[in-house]
Image 1 (tube, rainbow, N blue to C red):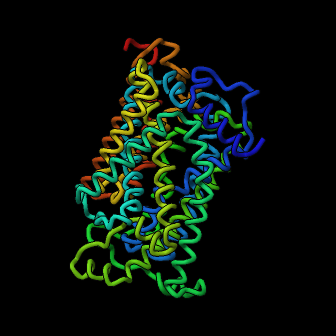
Image 2 (spheres, rainbow, N blue to C red; image 1 turned 135 degrees about the vertical axis):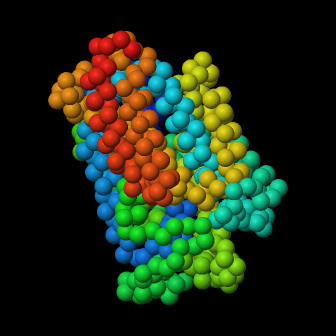
Length: 471
């Protein structure tokens, strides 16, 4: 059986509802190759065409970007391997069923709603990415880095058409989505590599030392951006997928793994997508910044546009347009599907088709507003910050329940629909560190780990206090 077939079966089982409320049986376990292709494809996608250029707008230096990404992505891989995959293989439950046992059904509904809405916003950003490529033949005005509202009728029409097409395909089920992704992913990876090579040639770079001289110490951030240092890049890249690893969302994926060592396959996504692709996309933007058009923006005190379509087109022509459309498509499709599944948990009587159309409609509306894509660094940091502490509750209960003297799966044991220990722990940790971030202008990714740790500790403390007491 081919690797693609393995991937399709794996994703279909994960999303299609098999073993939703029971551990995955031994006969359904998957080898590491099934996860390798899945993670490589998922993380070399539409977001990368935006994130790479956005790093450049922060004035980051070559050392800070290259080494910060190298080590930050390593920490993400270690988080998947030693937290997510370990617990997933031991328990073999979906995230949602695992949470239900700890939190109760009512709290899980709240989590699903938040997760679904955030998924829609991310999918909306990817619709924006595809629209920047589709708009090139129509000579469409591209959104600026500071734009929040739609900039014209052409933009609105293109976004709505793309959003409708993606929503309809997502509503057909994950089998269709996964087949499309398997075909498109190699094309997208090749396009990123080609863009990087062409951009280096356009910059006149023939050696690593010349690359270092051109990028050097970076520069001042563009208008409206903050200056990134090594620590900004390190923590941001570690927690870009915080919801998936320390937030435990990928328990639903790795419950099918034969061994926890399958967690190492996430390195394919981190170093093909979140390393090679980000740097290649940043180089595309470096070429554009040197053009008269970009210099005119900077002379007026404005940030040049960060539109993936024109950047890729300038490097590799129509192949770039196709790659950007496919990259946005392959990210938005599964994201809308997952959002639909999250909404279906909130309104279980609704069909998968209609909840997916609902999710696609919300994503399309979000895609009309370029701010979700242009502020993707900030949005991804917020997304991880909101959802990551939920994973701390799972980790701390799994690892420390004996030391803390608490019962595992307390909501299930006590027949609770609402475990107040969970809500209090999340609300206090989120509220405290979000206040610190806003009040003292602290980079949000800097406080994600402290919020995660505090949430886990508070959960143990509140559970110790409230378990076996009237709720």
